[in-house]
Every structure is written in C-alpha cells, then in structure tokens.
Length: 146
Image (cartoon, rainbow, N blue to C red; front, side):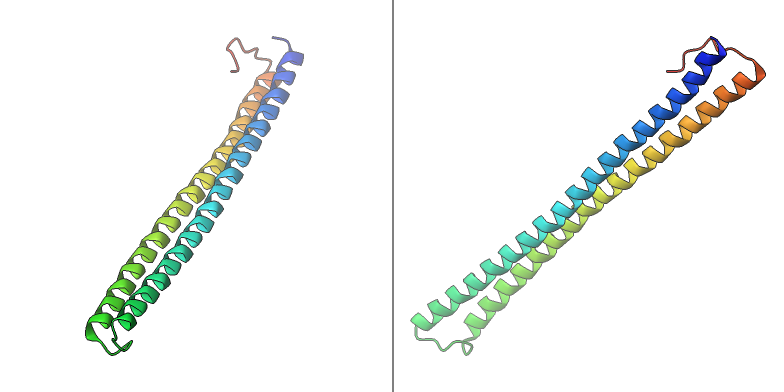
C-alpha cells in the first residue's frame, strides 16, 4: 500500500479508537443512571416498608384497645410490637443491602466501560505509532489492519 494509504489508515485507526471510547463512555453513563435508579428504588422500598410497619402497629394498637387493653401496658401487645419492629428492621436492612449491592454492581460496570474506553484509545495510539514507524522506515504492510 502506498504511503498516502498508510497515512490515511493511521488517521482512520485513531478515529475508530475515539469513536470506540465514546461508545464505552455512553455505556458507562447508562450504567451510572441504572445505579442511581437502583438507589431510588431501594429508598422507595424502604419508605414503603416503614409505612407498612406504621400501619401494622396502628392496627395492633386498635385491636388491643378494642379488647379493652390499655396501650403500652400489656406484655403481649408490647411483645407483638417489638416483633413487628424487629421484622421491619430486618426487612429494611435487606432492602438497603440489596440496593447498595445493585448500585455497586452498576458502578463497577461503569468503571469497567470507562477502562475499556481508555484501552481503546491506548490501542489506537499503539497501532498508529506502529503504522507511523512502518511509514517512516518505508515498510509496506501486507497484513489487514482490522
């Protein structure tokens, strides 16, 4: 291939590497958005679980009051309240953990995409430098650049 074609090949190699980096960066942004959505979803689930706990405790208080038991004086009603709160706290802990885990997974995927984009640029520079060296030394490449 002629020198002009080799120079064009160098330019196209760098252009392809830059485009590949852009694609990886868009992928990283998508993962970041998914991570943010996972955080919001976990927060909503936590809020919903707290709402259900308040409803359950209110129902328990209403039931006990309907039976003529003074609220807060019965050992059995207090035990039921404590059990409900423990279950809710365990659920909320699980929701938080799963939300953080999901977000972390998306953050790692985003970081991986950014690293792949940087690797694409480095690979493009490396390939272009090798082609530049071949042009300078007068070598003509017979192998495919794909």
